[in-house]
Image (cartoon, rainbow, N blue to C red; front, side, top):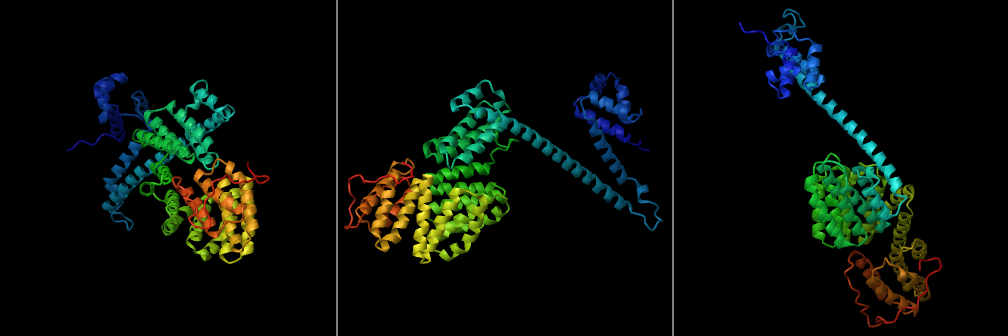
Length: 518
């Protein structure tokens, strides 16, 4: 007759003892027992009580909770082979042995899955708590650092503020750099530089440090791009990719791979390396996992196509982005999709569709309360009025937009809007009003944001307008050049080609508009 199996507690205890890597002799010596005594407990010759098992396992460095898991598993295994569980075969409610085994098997699998799910959820929650604590401390550190000058901040990270050397501060600085990029590029660069400085001195495992460095260098590349330092941006992204392999798979997850591709795509667009930009967009899309991230990537792909003047392609990308963006509560993202779609439709001449979109764009713009967005929407609506033949209303709307841009000190936008306003005025022969616009643009020539070739083209227009000799051909040529040079700074203005107007060589006699930026 075969021997009966050892009790479940003995089998479970033996399984956990073997996890220590100790054989029976070594474990017995560690517990202060004889080898035969330990062997008897594991084979069931000796009765193993639960408190004795718990005490022995703790001494061996094993978790007693693991014993409960194994005991439950053994009970379910016993159920699979216990014919009595089926009940009296004569009973009308009797189960077959096969059914008992099937149910026990399902319970065993379910227990394992449920246990894993509970464990994973507890780990996730605790990691979120640790993240929140680290971020709170980093915010406190940043509030202290913020009171110092930029050079002092770098020194403090190196010296006295040791708690500044954390991944959470790298994350905060990178996020702030991203937010500042559009309106204060130099501040964005400083924040990203400080993030890199912190990451280089960060306390943590090698993988986490490499991941934080990847994040910092990528955001520095983005900040330098916006600040028009394209060679510096190129170097920063190269460093980000150097650190990526060593940091891939980090628990920190500060910068997913799709985001690194996504940020680099913006650099390739700025460099006018369009095939590479589109390739980066596609690589980002392939690893993003769908959802909101996919929507963001497709939205940026459409923006690249707009710069390429592939407006139909841009509209297809925007349409594809819609599903992913509708999943996010980020109203700003919704606005960007709608506004960019309306802008592309306007440029392609599908004005009726622009009209249909405008009420939704207007509603979102008012909700978001971003002043510059409101001005740009007014600008788009002014074009719609002109395209509908409402000339006087359109010119009045452009006048309002032009003064708003001037008040905000946005030189390039002021120049574009002034040229657009000049076209319907010239069509009506209102040369004196065009001359006034040219005189009020004087402050633009002292603005640093305007490309020198754009200024050269604008100078030709302003001199002609001052003499009330500006033509529709010249105005449209300068306007077209300003739009193109905004996308491609390498362009050079060749001067007006019509015989009626040659580029003068003297500096225009212009005065800054009152209240403008001089």
